[in-house]
Image (cartoon, rainbow over all chains, first blue to last red; front, side):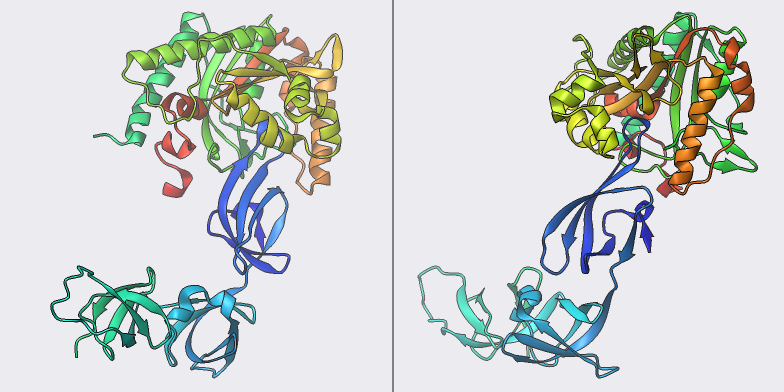
Length: 187
Length: 304
């Protein structure tokens, strides 16, 4: 249980059954009056922003959040299934909660899954992942068009721009924070 | 190149020095009163910190008024004060307060003191180098300061009246969300005066309108800088207000606090007087253009 004295930026609380992240906080006490704790919070499931003002004596339930390393198993329709390798427990995540992560998910990839109680609400990827190029136009020798990049499709279906020398079947590294090509994997 | 904070630390020293000069030049006696005391002036929303069987003072008010009773008619003090559970962009639990008291005066005299003091301190800062300004809006200390009653402010800026807001438990919220931002927009210091009687623990009620107290707050640059009033000198009335504050504390589940007995005993001997508390850290914030109190103190509690 948190009290208003625990409120600060970054605190995660449960409100109306959803986890919220405190993104702004201001303590005021006008003219020897009652203290007010003004907060701005973001719903960690749907991103809605909420303004709430609290007073002394109010309490909050901490958001029961847990990050667990899990392995991505498979996708069925819009459901992604992950498994905890220690307990073999499986969780299913909706595509909308996945965000950009779905662009980089390959079966057997190990990721950190954010759990709110039983519910999977997000996934944290490694900063860099390696994926194979399944389709890209060959680099024509003597191409003078001046293009320094070309589109490429990865084995996950994600399309991004890569340098002209990348060929089909090659393994490349992608920065998952920006979604951009990082380097070619030699070998 | 000194950081913003280093710059502010130097300015803070200049400000405190010039406050002393101001009061000494006007014949005020600088006093020091004990900071650990058996009982504070009791307020419903101010939480004193305990210190080995005593309390740290939340303000030097009680002891300074006892000096008034003893015949010291013009006194000032700059000291550390402590208030529990107060931490935010404008609050640290240990802070610096300036208080001054004058016998045979009322709150109108204090308003004049405030105007002269702020101009004096501002001039001292200008003589000692460039003014740093990080506020979106400059506060012009030289234009006349408007005086607005709480009643007027609620009507003008919140289309309401303070008593209705108090009844609905929305007084503080309206003050913070509507009135204070509107006052900050004026670009000059503002005196908000004549508070509802229930919002004044130690102030005298206005003789021609007992629904309000002769209390005012000075706002400048969006900051609540000072709180002053014509002093209540009726011991029975003062005791009743303290007891009422304790009743409300109990209702809110807070422990009752002891009453300052010697102060209540001596109060009948106090001359008509007025007294005011000004937050020195906030004044430094104003004159440095600092947005957070963290930028004007040597160390925040989190840094210790």
